[in-house]
Image 1 (cartoon, rainbow, N blue to C red):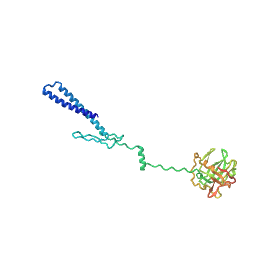
Image 2: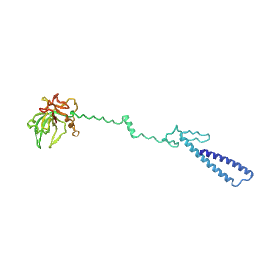
Image 3: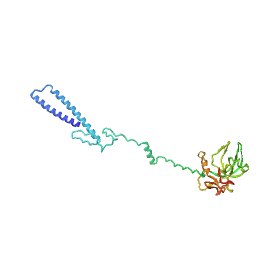
Length: 297
């Protein structure tokens, strides 16, 4: 609307100037031209030039608006070609159309995207699969046949024996047991036993103990379990159905033995059991001499 108005004004001014020229010529021919005619003409010409400049500015604004909306500009004969950036379809809100500016450089993909691409391409090192936790059962215990060579009273504790026990290793193990109140010292000499060998060594009244003698036990009575007669020191105790590998050393913080021990029991026949299954050495049962239906510690 503004462009049409300016164009109409310009045409009217051109017409007025033309009429003025004719009128001036008429006055000249009659000799009645006034002094102010030339001044008036200059004013009209200046106003005409100002209106033309305004028209050109409005044309440029209209052209820019049409380019932004994707309208193709066609140069008219005799006019300078229109410099534009032709948009195809409706421009995206995030895409700026500017015929005088270069497109910004593309940004590199984010770091997270780069990491994902590396993983897809196999560039990143894969973490090894976590080893499944071993079941908490009797297979975690390293129980062996032992042979008590000697036993004596602990020098600093009246209720403890200090024993030297052969369990099939290069040297016998030093073991401390709280059996003084239950088993006479004479019965502690040169006798077979069952030994739990992978407990963490513990100091008892200043002396280290490196294993534990397994016994049928009640608050009133305790008996050392007896391995088969033909077994020898170092033979392994097994329980059918629990084929796992013993821990190198039980972690006392994880309470593995404390979780397993409640399922130890002496059967009515006198055999050592775990969850109802016999402890065996070379296929033969481990037994208690006289105790029945009690726990094992």
